[in-house]
Length: 407
Ligand code: AMP
Ligand code: MG
Image (cartoon, rainbow, N blue to C red; front, side):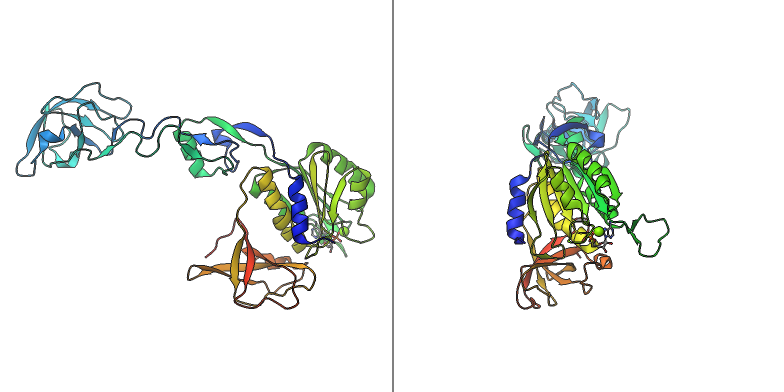
């Protein structure tokens, strides 16, 4: 049995980065950028109008007001997509629509509301003095050409998609999705939707795994519930070792009579780095690799499996995908946290903000079979071993479940 910190550092030594591939913009949601994205031009690309109105020379309309209007000659029109080629002379203006290029010579825009309005007439009355620069979006005021818009390792959300589109990226390079094999073992496992016979239980773990893989942006390429049967396991695993980046199992790595998984890994030449970590739940955690595939054997108890994925697999997948490691979060306990004498202790918990500080409490359902403890949880709390429980007011590690909110 090894310590959690030691096990984490062993895993770190074996993580490998995934390759990259190009994807079209429309299929980029939730992918991770594999290179910095730079501005291919300044934004705005040219001086343009922030309002519908008249582009004018500010010197010509000095002193203009409701009672003392200034009349300007309308010499043209500039609209978004159809800029005017004209240059303004003294006493001239042009109709200029939102987003349209400011014509040469103009240094201000008068909103149409402060004029006699758009019309077919070749003159317009201006009722308001507007200073130089008014209602003009300056070239490059938002972003300079060549600036990094989005850094490598960023997950693509609607904000990134919008920015990529703005700068014309129809296709770009992202990290390949990790190909993941998930499997469960146990003769007792039955699929949800079918009938339970005595002794059966529903396979919930693979549904949790599949959902977590989806959330992180991986792809489940192999998935199966394998009966406690070595041959079936061998054939699944040998294919998974050849085609997947990561294999994640639930169950079958404990000390039970039918816990074959580890034996079959060994037969297939998998290198074991550790098996059994000083933690609760999930002591019989297996980690190894074979054929450029990382292998996590998580115990079958639903809480051990779920917490095991979040504590051991999630961050590994993030690192493989090139997502920068985030600093661990801590919170202040509002209630005691039951520690273990020789094991790291993880429990689902609730975290929320109080006066701007993160506070938290563990679930009261502490059994590793009690998956309903995850229902009201928005985080996993973890503490190193200790003789006595942590008390209210103590600081504790908090792993916020990324899809949950903190209120
Ligand atoms: P094991 O690690 O195989 O000894 O399994 C420990 C416990 O977890 C047993 O009660 C199993 O029935 C249960 N279990 C194993 N696999 C699953 C699964 N896929 N879904 C839900 N429970 C499971
Ligand atoms: Mg089993």
